[in-house]
Amino acid sequence: MDIQALIWITIWAISMITVVVATHYHMTRFAAFADVISTMAQRQALSALTTNGYQSSSSSTESAGAGISSSGVSIPNWNQLDDPLPDGAQDPFSTSDCGEECVAECVFGARGVTVSAGDVRFALGGSSRPGWTTSADLIQAFDYYGMRSKALAMSAGDLWKATSSSVSSGQPVILLGNWLGPGPLHWIVAVRTAGLVLVCNDPWGGQTKLLVYSDFSRNASGQAVIVQETMSHHK
Image 1 (cartoon, rainbow, N blue to C red):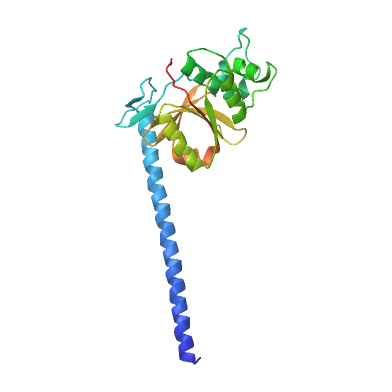
Image 2 (spheres, rainbow, N blue to C red):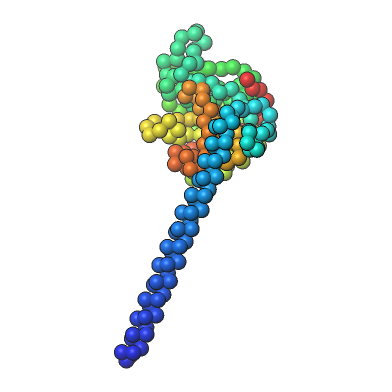
């Protein structure tokens, strides 16, 4: 191979490398830009709901304010930190009763029967059983109350889609994640979708938690339980 051919081959190789690098750079920039636009849209929806003071309702489909359509169910949003035992005493395991409180809310929604988180924990193993629960524990609790449920374990993206679909069709989804920040995992109940926002009952204080996908994907554990019952009772 003469020197001229070698030069041309080198120039061609450099050109191809430049094209590949430039294409990758622009595709990365485009993906980042698209992600920013999506996040901005989600944040705007969240801001609109917050500004309009979102309140859940018993209807299956409603307006959440600011032209945002909402669909799902309404069940009680109870406070695990203030849910006395049947004898009136404060539950000693209240700080770890999030899973039990979520089950209790869904039991009322489906059956119209009020049970405490302590009742659910007792059904799972007695009054001295700590409150920490797994998906299997929640399934066992629903079986005890004669309710159908299904455990999920999947990526955050797939779980977001599955949760949105289930909630929109009237089946709440109990979600495990770092919803209270770094530290122990915590159960909440997704009850409605409102535009790009997932509306959840948070038993830690009995608050309504509004989640956009960026927050969901960052904090979801990938574990969840779908409650496969009609929620016909609400407060």
